Amino acid sequence: MLWQLAVWLFALPPYILPGPLLVIKTWWLAKSLIAQQSLITISETLLGLVIGSLLGCIAALILVLFRPARLWLLPILIISQAIPTFAIAPLLVVWFGYGIGSKVVTAMIMLFFPVTTAFFDGLRRTDKDWLDLAHVMGANSWRCLWHIRLPAALPALGSGLRVAAAIAPIGAIIGEWVGASRGLGFLLLNANARMQIDMMFAVLLSITVFTLVLYYSVDKVLRYTIPWGEIQ
Image (cartoon, rainbow, N blue to C red; front, top):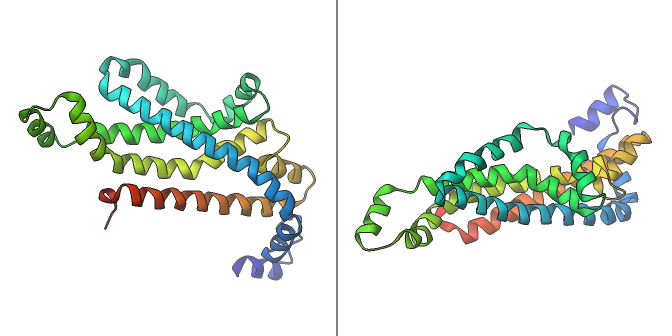
């Protein structure tokens, strides 16, 4: 492996760059602690993903069904992305406390925009010919929404959910960095303060594995539930 080879060739000390063998050894020795803290971060991430995705879908439906709402909801969506999450994370801790609430809200804020915009684009890009044909056959707006616009927009929503699955753990970790006494983010900060670089890499490895598992799990579910949106 190039990583281990670079450590050997340049004789890098562990406090600069630990080799993968040392990282794996550290992960194995601290597996109980990492697993315990992982459960907390996983819970925060999944709650943020589920609640944030539901709110994103509701916001997209409001934007499509109630045109006047776009005047105030769209600016809120843009502002939520213009302000760095780190800038408002301390406020979220003050408002929602040091518990799980502030971490879930931080994750929700990060994934709310991609889910909302993806679903909104899918809903408003429904083939006009399909809608015209449905109206000719006597379908009202609600039937068009349920039977045509929603199924047609689900592949776009799936794209937004995949992005959300990839960034949801970041939101939980950021919330833990700002204020927490447990979780992988807290463990990462604690290792950094003690210059335990090998432990930092072990935690990062755990975060990476969890993110990959979450992403491919969401992707698998979407491929099963929305087969017509799968790219051949």
